[in-house]
Each structure stands twice: as structure tokens, then as C-alpha cells.
Length: 113
Image (cartoon, rainbow, N blue to C red; front, side, top):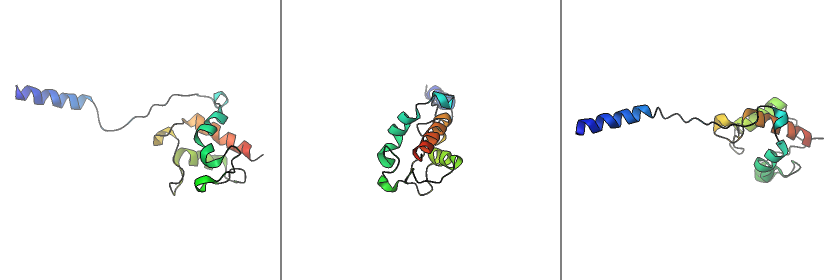
């Protein structure tokens, strides 16, 4: 009986797989289908403000930023090197898929105008 329990338990552990966590966030697959202002308001406005110039928690002024589109996508996806801005990309257990990250980066570009 004990042998059967150990065998069953071992098979259960084996069938559950490894300890790797898989994040599967579905979302839009086209930038034009994303409501970027809604995402910005949900994820960014607390620190950057509605117009991008609030600066709470040492947040950078998005209106005067000269960051390139690629750099913005990188920062949104992976967070800042100093850890003050947390990552939002799905690879880093964030809440935005790659298309949504790109849409938010484009939206931020519009704050400069």
C-alpha cells in the first residue's frame, strides 16, 4: 500500500510538469484594435498623469521625453534599470501583450504634440 502511494504521488508530480510558470495573456493582435488611451489610463496615469507630465514617484515627463519608440517599447516591456518603473510586458508577468505595449508607446508619442 505504501509503495502504491509513493508511486502514485511520484506520477502526480511528474505529470504536473516543471516549476516554469507560463503566462498566457490574450489580447488584440493589431495595434489599431487597441484602446491605448484606456491602457494608458489604467497603467500609466497614476505616476505620469493624464497629460504625461505629472512626475509622481520620480516618473519621467513624457511630454518632454526624447526617447525613441524602440526605447519606449523596451522600457514598458522590461521596466526601468533602477526598478522604479515596473515591467508591463507579458514575458515579465505584466499585463500587456506586445501589441498593447506598442500601442501604449505610440499613444505616449502623441503626448508630445
